[in-house]
Image 1 (cartoon, each protein chain N blue to C red):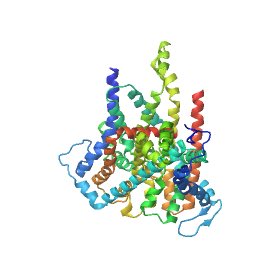
Image 2: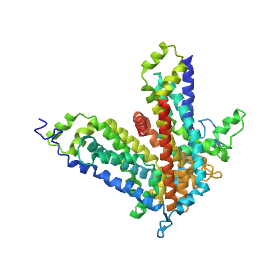
Image 3: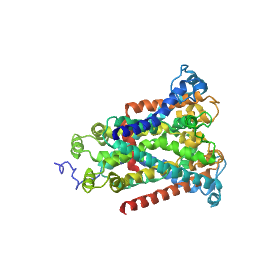
Image 4: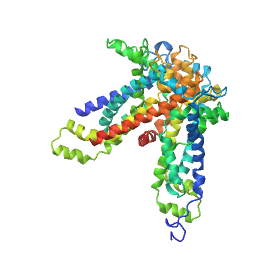
Length: 297
Length: 269
């Protein structure tokens, strides 16, 4: 029958209609992926404010970047953010997912509540936390004072501001990672635990030698997604601190935005974007290698 | 005992994640003097802060803009994305593999590298300060295509063959035969796209300066930093409440799909 209708795999002539179906994507790819990629390679060698003609400056944008203290500052800020955000995220997400893994009543409710900040706009969350973090009138300092602890200058102190943003970002995103860890936990075959308990392994030993190693793929996803998120940090410092105090919350994306739209340095902003993209790819590749090797060891 | 402890921790967690939102909504209704109180109740609730927001910024217009942009993006991603996903999953043509590779490649590129050139493209096309600049760059999503492709590969070949024998063309097969079988993936992609589009703020800040075209998060963000809110904490909280309520309402109805769609992004890593 298949042969008769010319639909057997062997005499397949190909579907002409297929090209019409993928055509929209090809147009989209050319306009919004290929063209920008190629154009970015032109842009990084030019000085341009969009209004006046482009001026070829060769490697000057790159030389400028290597000596730009604000570029390094934004990079260090991102590293500070990630060093707090990722461990905190894993700890909190893993903790709650272990509590929610058992089929207990109200499980769906708790999962839904923890997920709530994920769906809400980052702008709304930032406005909310601006009030919570306020030094004199903020809720967090009110709680600290009630416990007769010293108030924390959450957004005022250059040393504290970026960690404050990292805590806020963790609060906003941890719901995703709770769900990812729950999926990961579900995929661990229960036989492993049964075998371990027969061998007399304590729950803590089971956690270290079964749960953690089996969660390695999830761990990799969590680390990679948080890293990409951390490098994309923009709206939180934009609304909360404007990059201050003393540039301590200037994120990479905020710096690119400022260079492009406050100073009109399109070429230099493109160079920053280019270098940041390479850094992200390198970091993610390293994490992949490192965490996958951990799994083998 | 252990169950009790488990519940205590879970409840503390729920308070930490939900209480700030309740406090935000309460704060938007409280008089200015009482906002910094921890409690949720006040005897002096009023809509004063909301009135202030509505008189100071064209928030209704921004809401309509956001709806237009998000719905257009969602429709486009679902329709075109499923077309490409279907072709890649079920049709054999030259370049099939190549296009799939391009899609995977697109997913790998950090957006930082294409952001400025994309903006310049909008300037060159003269699309800044139009809906086109807000909608076109999000009309397709590589990740959604991958999700569609994966789902469509599971559809039994017999169903597709039967439709072909009936003389259906590919579009009819996709929209009349495959779509009704694919509700989970369609809803997942739609929810994910709508939410991402609704909450997007960096791109609108880049391409729209005209107030009447601003999306809701953009307008609220500029309201916050631009000093229009002056020192009115209540109006800030009211603006934040207006911005989050539509998504919170949608979330309360489609909660499962929101969570599943975000869980599917785990595949990206």
